Amino acid sequence: METSQPSRTAMHAAHHRARHQSDPQRILTDPLAPRILRLDPDELPPLPDEPLDLYGIRFVAARSRFAEDALASAVATGTRQLVILGAGLDTFAYRNPHAGLRVVEVDHPATQAWKRQQLAAAGITVPPSVTFAPVDFERDTLAGALATAGLDRTRPAFFLWLGVTPYLTREAVLTTLRFMAGHHAPVQMVFDYYGEAPSTLSPELRAVREAAAKMVAELGEPWLSCFTPEDIADELRAMKLDGIEDLTGPELVARYVGRPVPKADPVGGRVLHAGRTVAL
Image 1 (cartoon, rainbow, N blue to C red):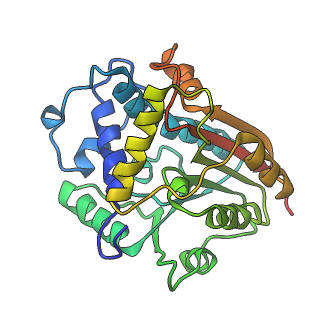
Image 2 (spheres, one colour):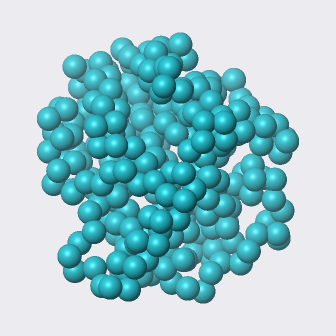
């Protein structure tokens, strides 16, 4: 992304969440999604008829729902710290149903400033439970930003990281995962990643994948990494994380709406939950 501009892919995901609110098979209820975009729900385009486009919208909703469900389980067992990495226009912190849960939003300064403007213009109150932690990785470190934001590394924490990893190099992804896994207290995380294109992908779906890659590259936010499920699981186990649940996009959508449309995801989006229930 351009350092002086907010993330365009974050805007794209926000539009997907907003459009999803009119889905008769709603996965994620988020009344703030249209508001943070300053859009009247009636102004949003109708849901697409094309199955692959509809699936894309539902996948964005499903990954947030999956993460919020996992967070609710963590809160029930005592977690009171949530870190949202690459928060974009995510609205969870402003509709947080969990008393006592503190939320730290981490993002590039330009994207975070844009979000705060959107919140103010939409009349969405920033509750005292929210702390903003701007990070410019050319000058700052994640550890330093979270220390400044008051993250207590001796108390349980939940890390939420959606819509970011494909735009980072493999080493940057693994470095961030190691930081999260290095939390001294019990820790859980949900993140998504792109799998490698399977050899069985049809020419039509392969063309869709290539077109999507070209589009984000032209926006200045190219895909830089992908993993196999076996590869990422090995890396996480080496970090002393377990309880790994790794779902394909179609599997995830099917969890909430039944048989997914379509059966195959050309982009290869996957969502993973892992954690550690004991202190280091």
